[in-house]
Image (cartoon, rainbow, N blue to C red; front, side, top):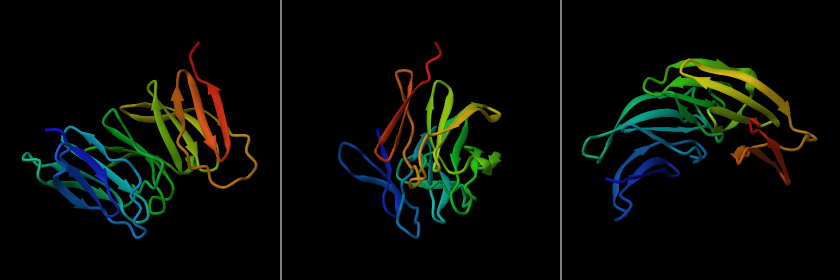
Length: 194
């Protein structure tokens, strides 16, 4: 059966797309009612994350599709807005306040941290060509190689910006180009391997 899984202000919900009927809901509350990060579905499980004290959890969808069971929950993996990527059975993302703005790599099924680094700052992510393209809230662009063992920094550079507000957009890779929007400025970089 097809399912639509999304976040509301105070919970993660699952709907039957054709009828709109609610199949299940599970509370996921933040003090500021901000559930921004897109849920990740993988092999009958759903990962959800929010900043501002909510943290992350993985839920296993019951066989009858009318409920979920929490597999694990961790406050330290509190992704606020930058997104989390699932690859090689690992979650890659940035923690917010509780997690100390640390970039993390955690096991999808256990939530256990495999790798963490606070020097990356808070990142917005995209995945393309087997790599993570990351943009920090201060305008640093980083390219990370990922594998079943974790991640490795390949290169980085700083956007030519002049101290504006936080850069909170997600990088986009399309047609061999990396696009980054910073306020009213759009940067484009050739990332093709020619």
